[in-house]
Length: 349
Ligand code: MRU
Image 1: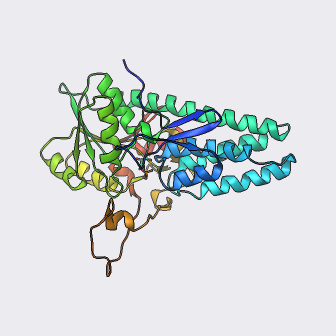
Image 2: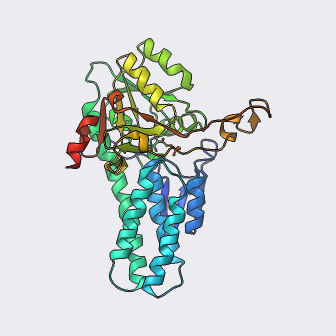
Image 3: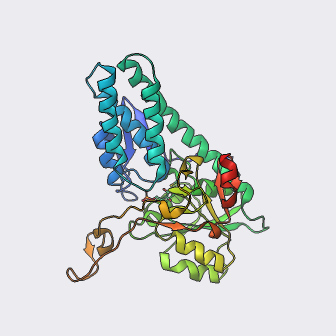
C-alpha cells in the first residue's frame, strides 16, 4: 500500500526552510526559501503556506529562525526578544488554532530548557522538526481511521471535499485528502469531487493538482453545484478539514463548509471532519467564540487580475471561514479514532 504523498510543502534544508509557493500552483512549482521569522510571518499572511497544520509547522520553524538571528547572550533578554517574535507570528492568521498550538509548544520548550542561549536555539530546531515529523505521522493515522469509518458499500465511493486539506495543507499526505488517499490506496475510491472553493480557489488550484499528481480521479465543480450533485445521488460522503474545533464539536473550516454540511444533512450524505487533535480548542465551549479571519475585498471583487463587479458603489464581505454546527457533523476523524462531536469532551478527559 502506498502511504505517502509525493508532495512535501515544507522542507528544512541547509539551515533554511523551503516552502512550496502555493500562490503559484498549479501553473508553477516553486520552492521559496524562507530565511527569517519575518519572512515566515509574511509567507503565512500571504498564503504562500496555508492550511492549519502546515501553518503550525511553519510557525514552529519561524520561531527557530527568529531565535537563530537574536544576537543576545543573556538568557532573560533572549527569551524576551523571542516572545516578540512569537507575537509577530501569532498575528498572521487568527482562525487556525494549530498556529497558536505550535507557537505555545515551542515557546514552552524555550522557557523550560536549562542552559545557555545556544542550547535553547538547538532545542527549538529539534522541536520544530519533531512537530514537522509528528504531523506527517498524524495525517497517516487520520487516513487509516477515516478509511475505517467511511460508508461500507459494495461500490467504490465518490467523495466530495472542499478547499484543500491535503498534503499541501499539512506536513504531507493531508487530513481530508489523507482519508481520500487511504481510500484510493485501499481500492475503495471511485473519484473525488473537488469544490472550486471561491474566493481563493484552493479546491480548483490545489486539490485537483494534488489528485492529478497521483492519478486519483478528480472532478472539479464550482461551489454552487454540490447540492445538485447530491440530489442526483452522485456523492457518497463529504470529507473536509478543520481550522479550529470547539469543545462541543462546532467546526471552523473554509467558507462554504457550513453550507455543504446543511445540504449533506438534507440529502442524507455523511459529513466527516478530518483533523488532528491539535485542531481541537477545548478552551472554547462553542464555535461562536472562534475568531473568523476577514480577508481583503479584492479576493471577491476580482478573479485573478480581472475585476468582476463595478469598480465603485459596491461593498464587500469576505470571511475566510465559517462554523459548521456540531449537529451537522457525522464524525470527527482524528489520529486517535473517530468521534461523534458530543464525545469530544469525554476524549479530553
Ligand atoms: O485559508 P486556508 O487555505 O488556509 O484554509 C484552509 C482550510 O480551510 C483547510 O480546510 C484547513 O486548514 C484544514 S487543512 C488540513
